[in-house]
Length: 392
Image 1 (spheres, rainbow, N blue to C red):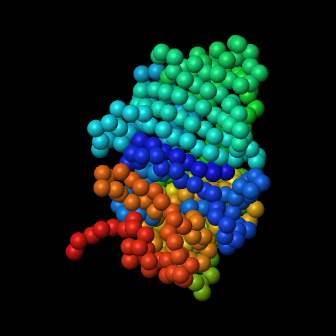
Image 2: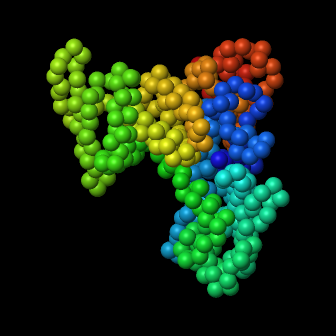
Image 3: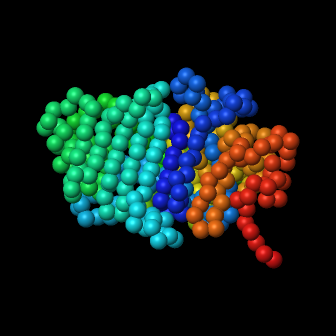
């Protein structure tokens, strides 16, 4: 599970910002929303980001996705760009490196990954384990090439093989996966990040993901679960079928009218966008919980009714004995009113005067208990900031 993520000089994040999953001392909903990954280390399973348009919510998710995806990205040439975009609204930062850090736990061991990178190449990269920060590998630039030091019992041939495969614009992890070498602690981290859910944003991508999962014959149980969820959400869908060819979905639905003993066939293109998105999100949620994985989601509530959005979040938050984690952005402030949401799960992002993004937590504010059940109203009134500043 992830403990914290730090970003510096990437998109709208000019200064170093750290997002923490560390839970506070509250016992509220602790049995389902907090996991003790090591003695005295209690981590949240869920976090929600609020902020006005153009404040940096999506940019934060892009930063998380960039570093977790870059770990495995393989380049064919050292001349390819890394994909890093620094903070551009400044005279200095466009020419400075970007920095990322992730602290996470795998099988009760603490890992710390550190990456310094620019648009051309990796400047330095480091992975440590344990509170003592025992080094697993250290990678630095040596002229135009990378010098990698491993704290592992590797042959010189194995070390050279990884170095040769590690182009200046790619990570040590990507190079490691290209050679026939096993480093147990490194492999554990590769397996952990490899289990992350894909970054899914558009309605089409969400539905396509679900169609690809549900068309597989071994997912009969998942299909029945989704059909049950649709029934409980008052959809009239009795059955559905999917085929996917070249990224295009061919779908149809069996619709049952209440109080009739007959079903009607409806082609998929006549189904609403909201219905398709809900099916997609329902599949993604069940996959996330089953794999006990990690997912970031931008404006999850798009195209679906607020009650269905709340139901999706509720189902995630009430899953027992689960180590899955979810970060989502939303404009639906009504979610703050649900009794299942821990205050330490709420984060805000606000645009500063220099157009950079500022990240802070609801629990940074004092006297929250005095607000009672009116945290939603306090946010809408601007007490916490991170609201749209509109002149009528």
